[in-house]
Length: 256
Ligand SMILES: Nc1nc2c(ncn2[C@@H]2O[C@H](COP(=O)(O)OP(=O)(O)OP(=O)(O)O)[C@@H](O)[C@H]2O)c(=O)[nH]1
Ligand SMILES: [Mg+2]
Image (tube, rainbow, N blue to C red):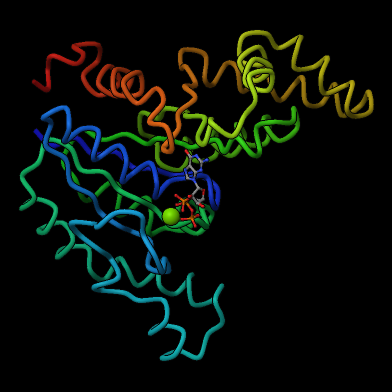
């Protein structure tokens, strides 16, 4: 059975790097995995995708053909992807790997909030699928950045309505103290509110505290694992969480 993983997150969060590195990690663990690039605008990828949306839709060509700038061009490119859905689906079905890893465009609002992204995700890649939302360590450092990243993750959850795991990406960029702070915020809303109030005014502290309590309810059962595509840190833990999410707890052995 094919298991589809969609890597989503803010621009530069490390989606492409993690797609490539995690596919390699799976292959090294003797688990078959393929990669699909769904970003029509990417110029250089840190891995060689098995399937590449740029073979069907290229941002440069769309910009030229319709006389659009980069933003309009990207919107049009992502909308045009849906015209190639059947071919994409056939290509993915032919891969025959246990895992298919999908790298998505950096402009998350274009992929998640317009129609095409959810249509692609629901139509291709078999029955077992989930999203990995990358919370960029560069944003998660500050209390407000951390809360806004989780809010975005909640929006993505609403849009795709699939199992979703939050991952703290590029975690090697954090100092030990920064990482400890983020982990403490996940466990303890009062600590987060205290830190928000310290850095902001009282009103924003209260607002953030309300938002965060809601987010805590939304993500009550989920962990946030700090991972690094640079050091391969915690990819094993990530795999355990993915397999638990996809198999409802059957776990690692299921894939062996
Ligand atoms: N230190 C460190 N750098 C990373 C890691 N992952 C990615 N990067 C760097 O962060 C930058 C962005 O990484 P990408 O993988 O291109 O991120 P992305 O989310 O695919 O970016 P877009 O598709 O452009 O939105 C690149 O310079 C990467 O080399 C990581 O785990 N650690
Ligand atoms: Mg990318």
